[in-house]
Image 1 (cartoon, helix red, strand yellow):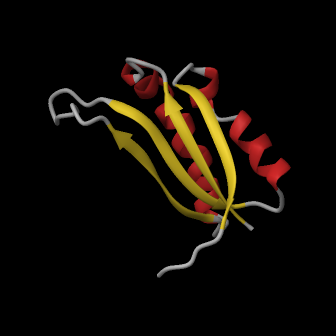
Image 2 (image 1 turned 60 degrees about the vertical axis):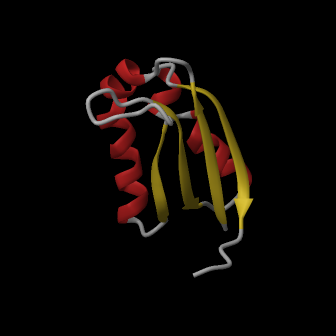
Length: 98
């Protein structure tokens, strides 16, 4: 089953994001290589620029066997440990289009 991970950053998360990004991406690559990652990416703030990037969170859509498995995976994200995310909401998802 597919699940969405709606991740909300703390204020001024950029430094912590940069420091923990390689570990965060490594986990996403494992999902991708297993054919379970549908999409993933950050939400830039409306004030974000190339010179001054700012983020408000992230969105991930991936396949897991259960809600509990998805929540366990989310709880182990390096962005959690680094203090990037203040909240992660995990919800079942049905892809309707395309």
